[in-house]
Length: 474
Image 1 (cartoon, rainbow, N blue to C red):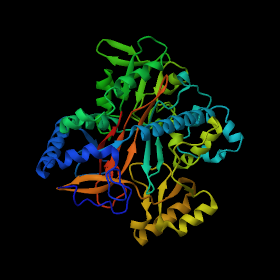
Image 2: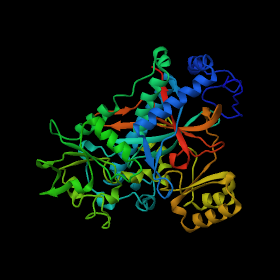
Image 3: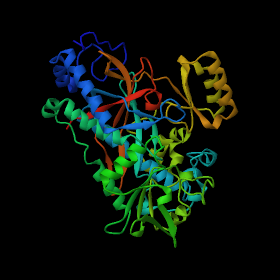
Image 4: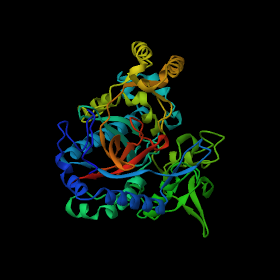
């Protein structure tokens, strides 16, 4: 049997306890797996991969000359979260989003948090995500961050921690929805015997949230994509289709008389709400990058005058900065008067002289990241880096300390994963998706990303990672 020789290797395992016993939430799954012969499980894996291939769930890898488009790797052993554990995660994520929204509103408004000395002004103003052009703006309903994907990890002690926040254009929710449909067909008997909370209504909730941003009874909504060569284009088209709204590029839109319009076969049609999947500075060549061919000239002025709602609002990228991430527990205490429900990973700021010295002397034991890096790029994992790589990275950090942070190497939790014809432990994280509209909604589950390479801690798809379905028990 595939589970017979499974080893936890002293890591926290999502399915098995340290003593080798099965965790309660996995009892039924384990019995189902053990009730199949190995060939049957492998057959179901092949069937799931075939289904995903036929759906065309792909992503692009920039800089890869051999293969621009790839199928997202998927593992059929699900991650299971108890209702009790999920309730705490849900409360913690809602708390975090409220505080982040208040922070963004504050720094583009009265700047009370800066005046009160909670965060240094230079940290905020030097962030590449801070847009001085957003000063004084008040977005519809006072909401800046409408869609968020927050990355959670579990350490070696089993504690859940926030690894980072993704507020600009968080991606991956289409994989969550498609993975679930494939799993229902792969393990129909499991869904019949387990009370797994549904996620199918996410596109409905997403559209409802976007409609809430407009005062019109039936607002016109669009999804703005950079185009077919964007790494998440599949998701852009998927969500537009599921919401029943147009997918548009910058060339499909125009500004007339301080309003945004979409070009259609029947003429111009005003757009009231735009879900943008394009970075802030590429959005409007008049306001930001003049060389951008992806955006819409004049759209930022339309937004400032309140004639179109943009989700997420421009300027939210400031909270994606990993240096500012380290202050989020302080934001929660400052704005909400509460202790963080889900703590951050301990973080060293290289802009602090004491921290910089420690990081440079101990880089072999740390993960060092660029403040605005993404996708597993712009970082170094000390224990697996060569001496030359560490030396070169130290020089990078010394040359620009503001833009680097460091964290201890976490023993990320693992979960059984079907690798070829064996079940082996692989490290995972979890990206739940949060919508902020009339209320805050956290999708029950999220994208469990798995590092498919043995021993790897990097779960990003662009770095060889895959995904699993996440089941939250009802």
